[in-house]
Image (cartoon, rainbow, N blue to C red):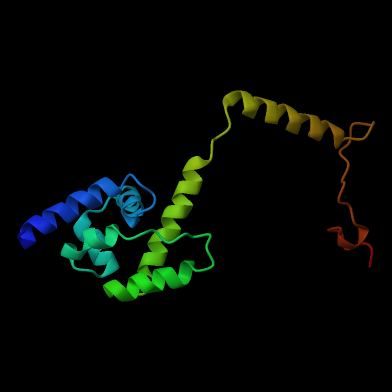
Length: 148
């Protein structure tokens, strides 16, 4: 098998691995999509030769929840002579982006309900005479300098 065939197969394997969170390829694909960057730009960010990117992508993704996360990342960085901390930066950014993407914004009905609750709280902040109360009133911090 020629080097060109091996390279082509590695590239294909990395593409297929991009849908499996077990591999770094999944995080690389997510990062590239979020940043709008190419394989060449990703390789430049990681300070790796473009030909080595598929091999790196096929590495097991370090578990961010594991106590060994940092040492696992450092091991990969050393094995591939990566720019220090760029891989961990990428992994943390992808983790944050995934977490944010899981956030479900409130529906309009939920927003209306929240508005009603806020209005109800506002009405509780008025005395019987209709004047607002100051729940956090502290005489020593009034603006008129009183209390001292």
